[in-house]
Image (tube, rainbow, N blue to C red):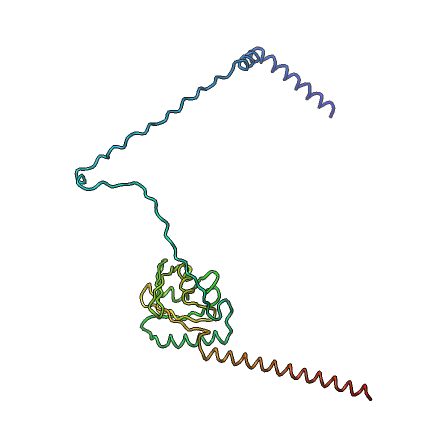
Length: 260
């Protein structure tokens, strides 16, 4: 290994000497020194010239529009549209709460009765409300079979007409088969809550007539719930009385035994 290393060093030394001789013959060292000694030329920056403002001259116009008033292309500031914010101080019973199975079934039964009275002249479907429909994201998904059969194939503005004839504009998304923009205002204005059931009747390609079946505004339903609550309260009072009487009886028996 030492012998091969020495031979390599010797060969390397010889090549270095040969390269030095060639550089001397070609005067490369003198050329490199002369280039380094010369300073690099400094580029002179051109002075900036500013364009002078020229007076506006009227644009040449065709003879066909010479007698018409000139068109002004000056941009005018656009005032932002004022959005009227609605205040909702009143909230219906059940807002923000999950509906009971009895209240949900009561609303669905009422909605089925409403749908049966509509007839078959216009297609309709029943939609029970859940929390995501009436709060949070306010997204209303529609039945896919109904959308494919009756609704437009592309995004469209749908009109929702309530039982009083008031109209609300909503955005229908065809690929997602649901109502997005505008549905929040419709839901809040009509104070929809979890458990309500709605009947949508398509009276034209882009118009729904909407009927409401409330889960909590029925007097019979509220009376039933109040009766259940009263019965539960009476049962709790009776249980408390029984427990108190048993406790007193136990104290009496212990005192008699201690006297004996």
